Amino acid sequence: MHPFVRLVGIMAVFVLAALGWVVLGGVMSSRTTDQRATLDGRVADLWGSPQTQAALVFELHWTE
Image (tube, rainbow, N blue to C red; front, side):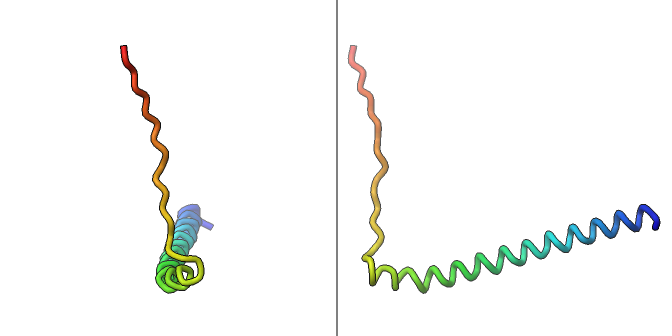
């Protein structure tokens, strides 16, 4: 087999695999977004609304 044909075949497999991963990532992202919109309200009904907590702040006052 000619080396050029082998290289083209390897590149084609790589491109198809990369395209497959991109499609899979898009589908998973879309499904996650759809489910999050549906489940956020149902979880809030059971456990209440999300709580937020401010991060701790470290302050150092230096007087001379």
